[in-house]
Length: 117
Image 1: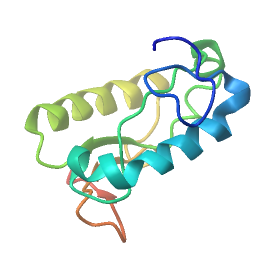
Image 2: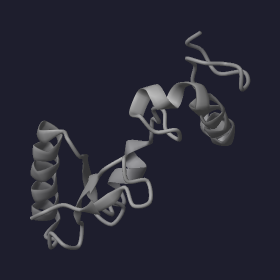
Image 3: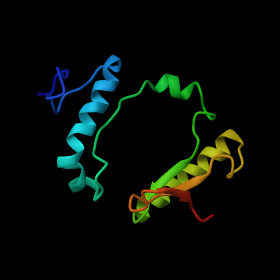
């Protein structure tokens, strides 16, 4: 259903903030059968989290550690570069203080690496 989740067997439902642990346990339990189809790796899957925007906005820019893009996605890379440039400009930061990184899920030992300037 599309209502609140009632247990680990629930799917296509939402979890309240107080049950984040249960949501993560459910995500992990579903990964072996569904995760590989989604990203080609055994330990991933799709999920969404809704966050309180005020909490994040009030802590800018320090709350952002990096801007990333997935490798193999030219439009995603261009968007990340645009966002990165705008972010450091808006907050008067150096590009190195909030690095632009790329995410490569085929490199599980180190999936993030610095992007070329």
